[in-house]
Length: 205
Image 1 (cartoon, rainbow, N blue to C red):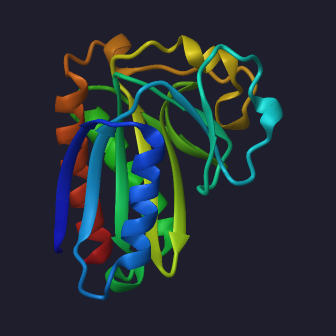
Image 2 (image 1 turned 90 degrees about the vertical axis):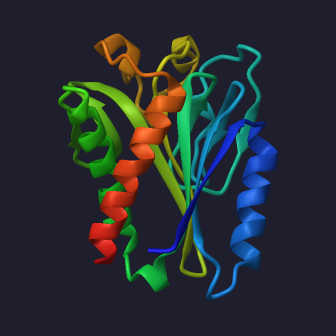
């Protein structure tokens, strides 16, 4: 499949979101799909149906209302974010299959690091036991996806305590560093993106 992987480093959230929207709006039938690997400075993002009451206290971190599905989540340094800018109609992948592929890529990546992870029914994302390690949220427009997933690698998890992550009160969060995975965020992003490519290829194939 024709896909570009772009490593954008640490970038502000809002301009990156606007860039995803512009890319998706202006893409042509032959535009290659792209994965963007990024980190963001601290920010809360509130999905389309996001309820403001899931933000429990103001700790000085900006809140951005955005156009993906899902509730509130936190992005910050040390967390890998991968955006999937894909033409689903061209790939012949349904949204549900894309979600499954993303979750499976995270599960396989963690398995390669000797960590057992799983899905929880009705709650998108990937969990280690009861704790969430990866969140995902997508927007589909004209048959194309943007937004994507975040994986907690080596970050300050305390801002999650000021929200109900993904709308779940008391949801625990965890990161790969706490599971003795010796990867930096950059290394984790590289490996996870490879697992994503394998899964997308399977769905497409």
